[in-house]
Image (tube, rainbow, N blue to C red):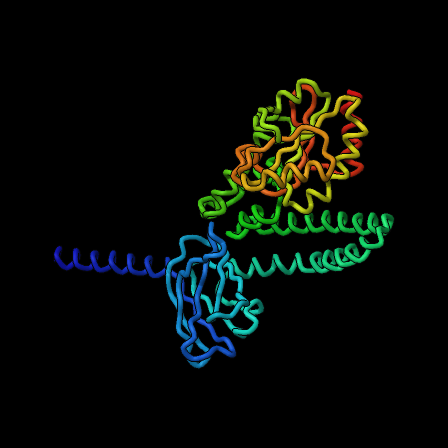
Length: 374
C-alpha cells in the first residue's frame, strides 16, 4: 500500500512539475496574409546591440500560417519579422499562448490575442496617438516657418508644442497610475517619463505586486528611482570632476563656491534639441552672470567627438565652464545624476543644494531671480 502511495505521489509531483514547466514557456501561432510557403517567421529581441537582434524562436510558414514555441526570460518588447521584409511588428509578450492575425506586408498593424500585457501596451499607444499626430503637424509648420525666420510664428508654435507636451505627460501619468498592477508599467515609466520624480513614483512603486517588482523592468525602475532620490530637489548636488576643453580639471565644487546660482547643463554637440536650446542659455548667462550666476555644461560627447564638442562651444558662443569625460552615455557624471535623456538642467544654490530641475523659458528666469534675491 505504501509503495502504491509513493508511486502516486511521485506521479503527481512529476505532473505538477511538467505543468509548471509548460506554463513557463510561450506558444505563438499566427495567420498572416501574403506569407510565402517556406518563409521563416522570427521572434526577435533587440538588446544592447540594437542592430544585431537575437532570434529567440522561429517558425516556417505554410498556407499563411506559422507556429513557434520557446521560453522568454522576461516580459518585454519583441519584434516579429517575416523573411527579409523590412517592416516588423512590435509585440509586448510574456510566457503565454498568443495568436496573431494580419498581413506580412503590414506587420505593424497585426492584432494579438492572448497577451494581456500586449493589450495594455496597445491601449497605452492609443492614448499617445492624438498627441503624436498634433506634434507631427506642429513640427511640420515649424519647419516651414524657419526659412522665413518668422520669430513670432515660431514662438507661437513652440508654445503650442510645450502645451501638448504637458498634456501628453499628464495622460501618460494618468495611464500609469490606472495600471499600477501591470507588468508593462515599469517599462512605460522608464521609457516615457524622462525623469520620474521619486516623490511621485516611489509610492507608486510600493504598490507594485512582488511579481512586478521582481520583473526585469521592475528591478531597473527601482535602481533608477534610488539614483534619482540622491539628486532630487532638496538634496546636496553630488560633486563631480572632469576635463575642460583645454585639458585642465574642473569640479562642480569649484564653480559653486564662487556662485549664487549654478546651472548644470547636460548636453552634447550631436544633440539637436540641445543645440536648439543653447541660444536661450546664452540669454540667461548674459542676463544673470554679472549677478552671480554660472553655468557648467557637461557634454556627453564621445572620445572621437572631442573636436566636434569644441567646435559646438565656439559656434554656439557658449562662453562659460565646460567639462566632459567623453564617454557618451557611459559618462560617470551622467550616471551619477541619473541622466538618460538630454538636454537637462539642474539648478544649484549657493549652499550646493539642488533647488530646481529642467526649467525652461520664463520659469527658468523666474527661479533664477528668486534665488538671486535670497
